[in-house]
Amino acid sequence: MKIIECAIIGSGPAGYTAAIYASRANLNPVLIQGIQPGGQLTTTNDVENYPGYPSGVTGPKMMEDFQKQAERFGTKVIFGTVTKVELTQKKGGVHKLIVDNKEEILAKTVIISTGASAKYLGLPSEQKFMGSGVSACAVCDGFFFKNQDVVVVGGGDSAAEEATYLANLCNKVYLLVRSDKMRASKIMQKRVFDTKNLELLFNHETVEVMGDNTVNQIKVKDTKLNELKIIKATGFFLAIGHNPNTEIFKNQLDMDEVGYLITKPDSSLTNLPGVFASGDAQDSIYRQAITAAGSGCMAALDAERYLAGLH
Image 1: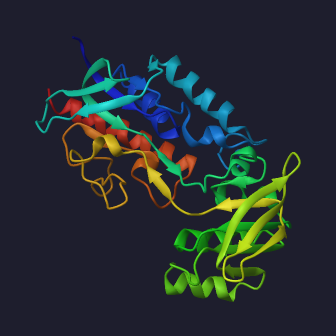
Image 2: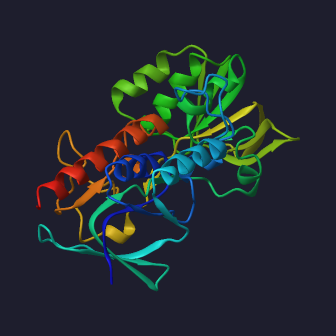
């Protein structure tokens, strides 16, 4: 079986950028798209904060552009999901990837760009309005809700951060916390309490996201009083965390308690030689298309250097 120079797992901004750089370096990369070709951005209607698109662009169109650019330089794009990996610990060794439980790919280097998936409540109405008022990224979509009323769900640091960020843009922000207290750090809680147009609702759960073509109200339940109420809002933001898509690398690669891959400082290097991580699979902090793309570039450059060092 032919051993390829570089395999890229995942097809968001990180994966495609890694492919552009790897193919331009004559590494002839093979990119396996994964379960959601294009990654999380394909669930985003409008992307207005990525440089180079002055009028904005839809997430799916942007990922289409990324793919075309990668293919233009010779990247082979495969539709499929890597279901198992056998990563070698030996420098200069060969890594084995299994695609869709059957096809084998042998590679000298592997770039992991499997991303992360936002956690959702699991309501049918939430799925119905995805991209039409429902979002899991305030920094990405907050601008579209300028001077409007919105609801944020969550009680941790990311919920506090997203709610205070939205409070700078929106008329009113309601922060729904399921229990009777926030899990966020004291400093983040203080920021929430000090924000005048942010209303904290403890012991509140979402029952239904409502609207016509777009969201216009949220049905919630006050679990302490056992009462249903309606909040008029045009935006519904989930801030209950993300799950990095790194399950298949467990017991082979170092990761934190949540599952984010750990890379060596100022690099994309993992604990195994020839294996590099980029994008939201290793970034729990920024989670933006542009930072993912930047780390994809780093991973390709690191892979190229690693291969050059073998000769």
